[in-house]
Image (cartoon, rainbow, N blue to C red):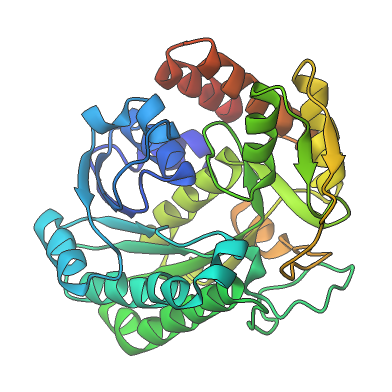
Length: 351
């Protein structure tokens, strides 16, 4: 079974996505609408200039504005749509923001997960659920080997720890409710994602774009930190592949790492260098007050389980991922039709 065959599963399916107008959500919505899915999204109001807005996705998707921590609104949204597939991506995703607002981060990332899973528990139509977490859920001892799915979940700072808790919630709901109901549910831990349209604060590629487009140097806080970087289409397609296949074979449900090859696990400085190579005139420099809040220096994933189970492999290496990312932003600045441009990049990726 190939990727396009997996996507054909969604033709006519009703897919409920939390965080649908965020960075990854926008790319997922674009893929799903092109595949013929009926998509309903639940999220905070769409930000001006976001990928979702730039792609013009609001015209073909039902969007419900709300806070994922609002139990009643989440329940009403799910029951009102009666989805076949649910993909939970709504989150407070910024490490530094989690230090500034730990309570809000836990409320969103933990109680948000409780709310969506409890709403799904009460909905009889659902045949597949995916909870998107992060590679940061592991107890990070900064080893050189990649973390495997069976290793301890205990993120160090509030963001990572709240996503570890989200996974514990998922496991409890699986054992207490979903297994008995025959509904497969999986958690996906993906590495750092790059691609066109990300507006996140304190994230390297958006910082690169803001600096380069304004003619300022790109400021690096932690140039030596090592992360697994991948284009946004890698995890988006992987989530959809998993949701489709586990609906037909419930034994596939579980926890999976989704990340790039070893060669794409690089330093922040190397990522900035690749970006500058693809954006004329862009330059980088190290911040004078580099550091600040604690962030791990090394984080690697072992993605062997997902590759063995699904026959999956990354399509674009880091050089291609950065090139495609820069091209997207430059096309947007040039006023191109970004829904069409995004669809062209997606078709190139799918092959």
